[in-house]
Length: 472
Image (cartoon, rainbow, N blue to C red):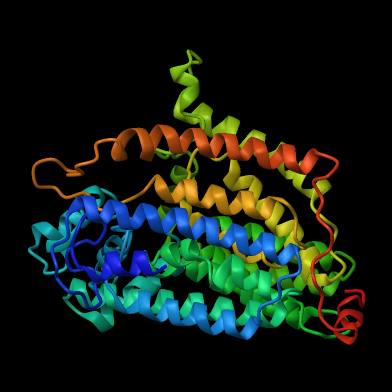
């Protein structure tokens, strides 16, 4: 993670946007250096996590608390340096500024701020100037809160959003430390995972807010009580609704909680009521435009789309057809995941197993592939029993991250002034698209293979184990 933090610390570059918040050296690094640092970070980070998972299966047992504090220290460092690898957080600042000024971010575009000579609009990323907000209402309200405090300064708003992202990341780490059956594995997959730190804290992507609400919902609903009743169901459902209000795919996380509560009508009613109140309620408060944006987003296609090779091979396919095929094949992947993922002996594992299967099926073959979407599944992966797909999901995250590096176009002359011309098109688009498609197939094949199930990982004390085995 030090390589990524150093790239951010160097200041504005083709991975750090202007007015990206945080303190930097303003060193004006070369594009070649930034490419080297960020690509090396991805490769070494993915390798380190995979080796750690392998060693864990062979009996390596570091202290979980040491991993927790080490990851939190890395998160703090990344929260204090400028944003890295993306201009998305600047778009959050723009939509937040709109909200703070009383404008509807679903019906206003950043160009309006530019035309009004707003100081925040001055730093609007080129890619977002004609695009209204594509985020959930809860996310837009969070952006507006940051803008209300940060005022007319892009730098201050971005810095506040980075601090909020770092806090959300740390909250998830702390909750996983308490509820994960194997906290060491949880910290390898989340807290000390350089690629999760890069997406959630360095990039400050809003998905980390949804992930925080999701993990809190699991902690609330699966607390050690004889059975979750109506009240716990309502609180957990409200948190799932908040997560879905950040980004809609987080609604799927509630399916795992509903599964473990399927024999308790009161708990199910509480879950449904909580989700309706905060999730559906937030979209209703935001107005019809929020639903329109949500439907439009479902048909998007990303540059790293794993289906993009089919037209190149002569298979005529529109973006809408790619989306249809992607989600249809995702249903088949869902069936495989539910069938072949290792059974979980505790309530948290059973709930996470279903929620992870739903989220992973959605992401694996979706035509919209972004590495910062993976906070939907990595906290859940940390709660399910270990399987051989752990490393493959980490490898898939690494491939997706390479698709968006170095991350910040420089609109002066050549928008991607890389002295390494292989980066922008072959690596970022075609090679990554191929890798994501191949890895999706590999994950399914490994799960279907007779040896695809892993032996149960290290467990906690016998007393804790007996508690967790109580029926939910």
